[in-house]
Structures are given as structure tokens and as C-alpha cells.
Image (cartoon, rainbow, N blue to C red; front, side, top):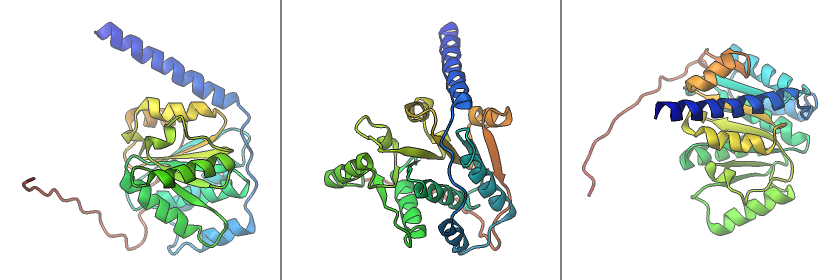
Length: 244
């Protein structure tokens, strides 16, 4: 059993290293410098950027404007502003005609992100869709057609985004939220579809493998350690009860 496990781990690491090697040598899409719309959208944020949040935004946009495909992890506690950085990156990608996929582990998070992205980009010609079990068959079909035709710019979804019937017209950016909640095969499958797309991962609790890749230089890392002003502490409650 031990030999079998070691063999499986070795095979997985070889595949991962091959993928990251291909990404390192690949010529990715060089996104344009910030437009006036980009500046306006970022300035419309209701809160003042924290120093770390501002730094993370700069790092992400610098990566996107590089010829090398981005593979960056943003690590920060809940409520520290990771999603806002992701929204800015998504808007930057859409302005260059690229599509954005946002992968979230639960249907609740999918709906939260869809609302946030749609609300932040409501003043611009950006279509945001969602794929999850909360959507009817008709709605899912419309989103799939929109992704294939390029009419849907940003799609937020669970692992449903990894299904074979999901076809993008021109995917340019993949955002993975709470990636420790996904299996390695899930994440690497979508990355493997387009080895040259930009990858932005968000996490409050990255798995050891992800953190190791970041600390070893295989992936880039941005830490958001400064809380927003007047941030209320997160409260966690455990509620018990009888289920009928």
C-alpha cells in the first residue's frame, strides 16, 4: 500500500511539474495597460484600499501585462479584500476581449460572487453569468450558449464549470476561490485546458502544497495581512438541534 501511494504521489508531482514548466515557457496573452474605465471602476470602490490590498492589485496587473502566464495566490483572512482584487483583474481581462471563469466551491459562494461581480461592474457593458444547481436547465443552457459565442464575459460556477459541455469562446483568466476545497484533479484539469491562461487563486487557508509552491517560487504569492479600517471581527457559531 505504501509503495502504491508513493508511486501515485510521484506520478502526480511529475505531472504538476510538467504543467508548471509548460506554463513557465509559454507565451501568454499580454493584457493592455489600465484604461480610463479601469481607473474609474477601481476608484468607485466604497472603501479605502489597505496597503496590502493595493500592493496585491499592482502585482496582479503587472503579472497580467507580462508575456508570462500569471499564476498568483492571494492569501488573506475573510473580509480583507481578496474578492475586490479579483473583480479588478476580471474587468481588466474583459476589456481586452477575454472571458473570465470564477471557480467557487459552493453554490452559496457562487451566488455571492455573482452578485458582487455584477454589482461592481453594473456601470459597464459586462455580462456576468452563473452555473450551479441553483440555475434552471434553461438558464444553464443560455449561459453555455453565451460562453461559446462570447456573449457571456464572466461566469461564476462550482465544479460544474469543469464539465465537458462548457466551451469558452476565448478564456483568458481563471479565478479559483478557496482552492483548498477542490481536489487537485479538478484544478489541474481546467488549467490543463489552456496552459497559457492567467490563473489567480484566492484563499484564507491555503493547502500545504499550494503554499509550498508559492514559497518555492513556482507560484507567486501576495499576502493581504492588513484588515480594512473598522472591520468587524468574524464570529463563528456552532448550532445544534434535532433533525426531523
